[in-house]
Amino acid sequence: MPLVSVVMPVFNSSRTLASSIRSVLAQTHVDLELLVTDDMSSDDSMDLLMEFARQDERVLPQQAPEQGGAGRARNLAISRARGDYVAFLDSDDLWLPGKLEQQTAFAEAAGVPLTYTAYYKVDADFNGEGADFEPNGRVVQVRTHVDYRAMLVQDHIGALTAMYSRKVLGTRLMPEMRKRQDYALWLSIMRDGAEARGLPEPLAVYRSHQAGSLSSNKLSLIPYNWRLYRDHEGLSVPRSALALAGAAWHSVRKSQI
Image (cartoon, rainbow, N blue to C red; front, side, top):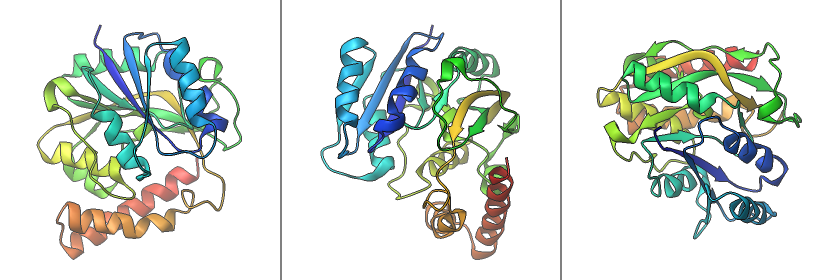
């Protein structure tokens, strides 16, 4: 059974953190380590992490030396990874119990280093658990295969479902960007020639952000996407504009689910 390193950044997440951690520890694939980096929270998130660590040795918390955002927190966790695979889950999202078991089997059978799955959406005030989640019909569907060209038009990979192989790719960190670091990582992996394959079964639960928040305002991502295309990927202005239009259309479609 391959070891999976689960990367979770935390910042003032005490309301949802416990259920997110429980959804990892309840996985039927038990060979895992949960690498959690607290980004200098001002609430009791770190206390919760330490309590989980006392109860389960697979929970490995870390305090960031300074506040650096989600991307840097993820990289601190990735740098500690020992697993054959690296998977990602934010501290307000959930996995269904069979997520890792099904995805690792799928990754081994497909023979590709980057995989992802479909996922459910719930409202921000959802207070259930991954272990007893009942399908709600709000499913973000995925393509079964994407390459670099397709990913430039839109980000087809939900970060809460992404998993890459350290055996094949080595340890891959996220670029130091304020936002869209996950998208930049998937692009860099596929730019190097790797394929990505998607499992159409929804195996995770994404918690929508509160209306009016920065994260829920899709317009706020436009300048970050633009810099990603121009600075990180080195695209021309016309290609960047085309990619930006595709990203905007994809965001609108997902927001209606």
